[in-house]
Length: 233
Image 1: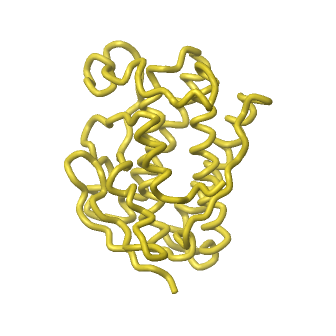
Image 2 (image 1 turned 30 degrees about the vertical axis):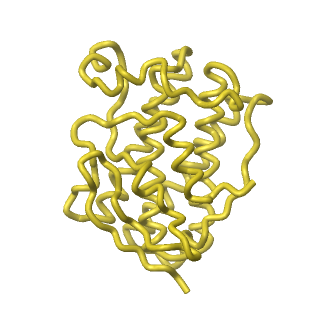
């Protein structure tokens, strides 16, 4: 029997205070309070860095753990792990909900984002080659079988993706990789704004941090993802 989702207010720091009820007896989506950042702003040069204190403070900090690899390789593997999660989530939701959501805004969102996340995984795997991490095993705890729970979880995943990419912008050394990451970041931000508006027609969830987004360190993002229990192997 599907679990019900109760979307509530967004706090001033951009975290969703409560977007899901207990799943299988505990709050599998507890990271909704921790990991969500909304909206999107393209990172760039020194002028923007100076204008956004949070981004400047993130420079050289919050790198992924050493297990992902050194330097830019580690950052790309960190991104690939998150993209694996998103791709698997949307693929499963497409199988479970695709036909039921046909002709709706949420269905259009699911169709487009599924395609985009598959492309992100393909790009990162191609860039990393033999150095790429393997795809983990996932269990989405029923969140892909109920449309309300799917919509709430999608909002968090997209918002977390924005914060994750923004958090590593200042750490990338290769201009090529920086440009690619920036391109993915803007798409994640478009996804975030779209699902935010679908979930809350008032528009408050389009850009929950206001005119400037806040980066998330790899530690913050990985802890939030771990709290979901979605990665099982």
